[in-house]
Amino acid sequence: QYFGDTFWLSPYSLVGQSYSDNLDCSWVIRSSDCTGSGSVCQNSVVISFLQVRVWSGDYIRVYSDPSMECSPDSTTKVLLGQITGLDPDLPNDFQAKGCVVVQFETDANQERSYNDIQNLGDGFSASYRDAGIKELQQSFTKHCLGTTHIALDGRNNKHVISDSDAESKTDYRYPNDLDCIWEVQAKGGEKYVIFDVEYDLEPTYDYLQLFSGTFGSTSGVTPYTFLSAESTKETYYIPTDDSGFSTIRLVTDSLGRRSGFKASVYIDNGAPARNGCPNPGTSGLFCEIPHCVVENSVQREMGSSSYGVNVDYQIGRIVSQIRTS
Figure 1 (cartoon, helix red, strand yellow):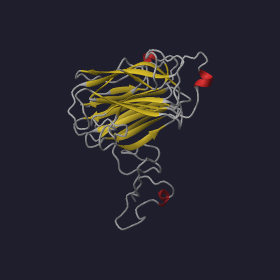
Figure 2 (cartoon, helix red, strand yellow):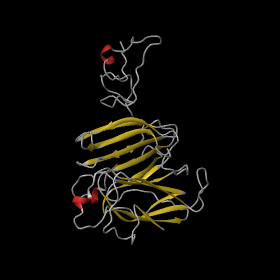
Figure 3 (cartoon, rainbow, N blue to C red):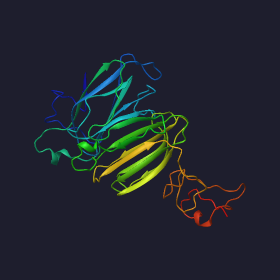
Figure 4 (cartoon, helix red, strand yellow):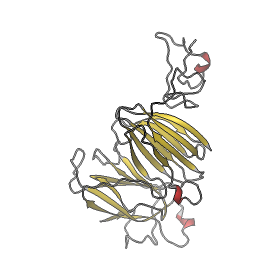
């Protein structure tokens, strides 16, 4: 069966059509054996996009939902892909067990009136069908897409991740309008995941986010740090949650591009020892972050409002700093 942003004479042609501004539309599609939240669902839903012509700043987002709630407001949705562009490169199918949520959001800008001179139309059309038990792993097209799952089950198990497939890059710049997520599970009770990264991003507007936890869990994620700079090489130790999960996310806006990033994720017992963070403004599990982090704390003596804390660190945004002498 077919669905899309509007009614069409043919699902294979958008000629002469145009979607409206300020849309916020959702489709919840369930497999034949999945009736709602808490259902034991075995079959999968397969979504195939037939045509996509979506202007920058407008998005189609495709989600699975491990809880099977599959409502637009569900807090356990997992992003399978954020789609934008005119005839973008896409995988053949998006597939998830039980149910899929498709959201279409548009901004207030009217791009077509001055960009679609040939009247090729804009919007999207897609089909869906019920499938068997097999569930596909979403991964790269020519660039990262949606959520990729990585399991680290040994200290010699190292995975390389990046914004794009290096062999398919032509201009060595990442695409605009990306939202890519890597969920990393460190098995064996590891407390952190090592993230060796070299990145070249448009400062402020394009960024990497590091989290403890995972978006698909009921407990969600806890921010660790935010990376947005040109030509930088660093190592971070991302805390895991109680289930061993850490999350890495790349977000790019609709304008400006640079080279992107390439990183290795792995587990190891060779992290540096920590005895407080002696340098003002540093933070992190092993003081590896050269700035404050989202959630900060100051260790103080019981019953004291300032003793034990360097007075220089009490001005502005305080990070975890302790006087040792």
